[in-house]
Length: 288
Image (tube, rainbow, N blue to C red; front, side):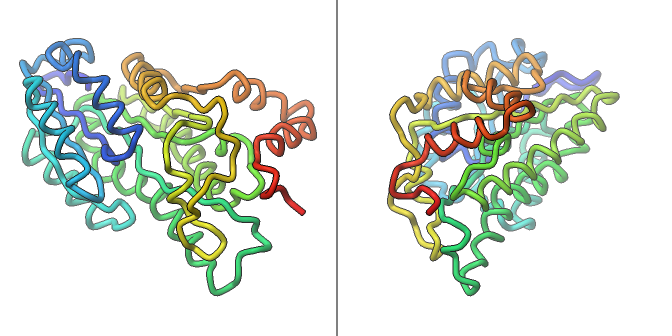
């Protein structure tokens, strides 16, 4: 949320605020809401928050807590896999608050299946993953871009370590996150002269249920995680790191030591990185 030359607003739009990370991020913002506009460069007296998620019911308690902290809050039910809903979200945010200073693209769906186990008639869910994880962030960003440019704002894209290193059994998910990375890295360079920052966040395994709700080979809810969950990062810590990166306009937030090491090690010893990734999978989902 950055002040433009003529703006007195501080409009903060969180897409997929109903997810665990989104809710945690909003919870972490709560104590700082009175000072949030000044901290992030605005001059508004009250923070202006737009919370978007597929189910408005998921946001009711979060929105109420934000209002009690003296924030102005707009809740917009949004399915980001629908471009029309992405445009409508931005239009409502601008109509309500006059502009947008910060956009956080946090929507995402998980998936775990060996590619050879996916039947041709089930491949459609690969497109569904791309529409939510990649295209949803593209559509929201495109609609918000003129408003972010006007205020020299901030864009945050929540990717994944699976977007830095391909993970066996996560071909659809990794593809969607690699696509996000390429898009937002290129966009960062395009927007730098205009003062708009782009922060890519790369969480590892976070203590949420996203993998349980993600797709299996049949395109159904997996009901389990294909990754080893021991040592999963607490949701609140993940959200804290994302918000800190946003505030300081960091280019990237890579959240684990293994992720930072693996990113560079794959250039020198890719076989070692493959073994590291395989070690992170549950035994019964290993490639066979």
